[in-house]
Image (cartoon, rainbow, N blue to C red):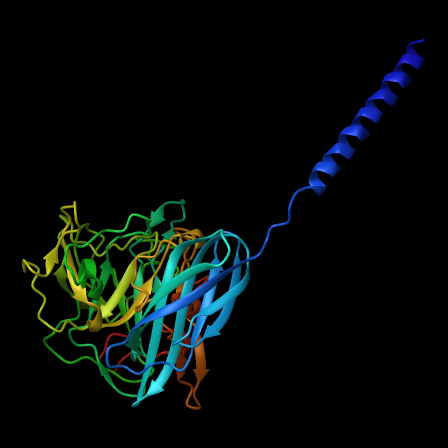
Length: 407
């Protein structure tokens, strides 16, 4: 009797399961497929007296879904992009034109664009800059782990490379970290009516403006937070770098571990914080290289400004003074939280973490017959840079300048 009941209840459960499954299949069959959308993109050109590009490249990226669409457009006509999956997109417009002996780079973007309805209209502002010979070549910002698993950040470095065919003088060159320090959706609002013509520095260091520092094509300079052999036992034997040969360092003796090394000490040009230490964020900062068109005055009431509703001091840098820019973010999901104007850097790079002993390095575009490399420079760090598992100064055979006698 017990066995008969068991068979009966088992058959009943199976019939109920089949009925439920059939109903679920029927409900699923009624779900509508995701419909692809379209967006029409136009551009507003802010070029001044610079030439108009013959064409522009358009890229739509949904970073959350790792989904991308590309097309081209004429600068005087809009373009319609079809087949877009609903979501949040970053739209980048870029181009390059050679004229009058210069390479002009065009860039503009729109971030956090919700494309969830069909036939969306979008207008993107596009600016222009001339390609520079001085470039960020490799940047190591994330720091390293000590043998005991602790965090170490004093081995950060910034390599600047002469990518052109003429000698460059880095005398007076400045490196600045811009506001905000890390990627965020809460961007500061600046009070000036022409605020879009500037970037705003949290801190700035400057190569001494007292002597010439020529840089031949294919040579680079290293700016070290601390120009020491970081693999020494009293520092971090697990560090990936020895920076004793660095040309410049940002010397501030905050601990007894910091010594005045052979590298040339840079000038602290602007730093309103109590501790003026060139510790850039290990979460990825946004940096500019520039030659100041006017002497830097850290006490200037017109150049030192605060965001609306805040008291923090920032030094404004004319975009036209900038020779190169690099934005880093903490991880790929922060690509949409850009703080750098697109005309300087329409993308961003990331090592995707902290204390990983990894760097971002500019990709090689071509190698000349004499072995000198030409690096990519499209003003889009997403395209121009790649992650290196081990940071390395003077990668790809870059030379140290002749005036570095301690290399």
